[in-house]
Image (tube, rainbow, N blue to C red; front, top):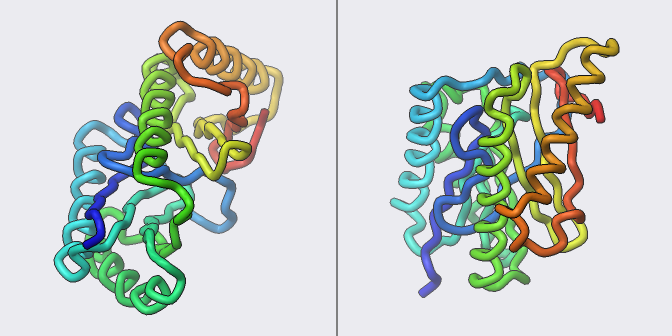
Length: 223
């Protein structure tokens, strides 16, 4: 029997961004054209957001009880389900799981989200996955605490693909490209670097290997 793993991750303004409740990494924010821009969520909206992700998780589990999978959302207006299985089994359940997730969100506040089904990296052990999750969560929470008073700060997302591909993406409400906007970007970048090199995170190795991306309101990288 496979070990059952549930994961819920989300992009939230003052809650847990990219925080895995059990195991696995989340996904990076990247610019997507012709999509509705996500807005910062209130506390009640955050709770509702997590509740919907949990509903998707529970519905998938009802049918696939021993499946290892991760349910997450990101600022690309996507709801992702990542499945830790071999390619053959993944292909056999992909469409059904997509249908399950779509049916759960179609009448919810996530109705405009695109459901994306992906296959997880099978090379990571459970212990390695847990360690990565703790690192990503620790970084995300520390950054949210440090940036919560910044007027243009929106969401944070952290991603781990492999040891050489790690990123921190910060969504902002910046709309212009003038000197004031550039100054705010530099301030955010400085704050992020100070937090990453603080005593709170000094237990994390290779912290400098994280790529930092700051996005404007349109999802464009501005740093």
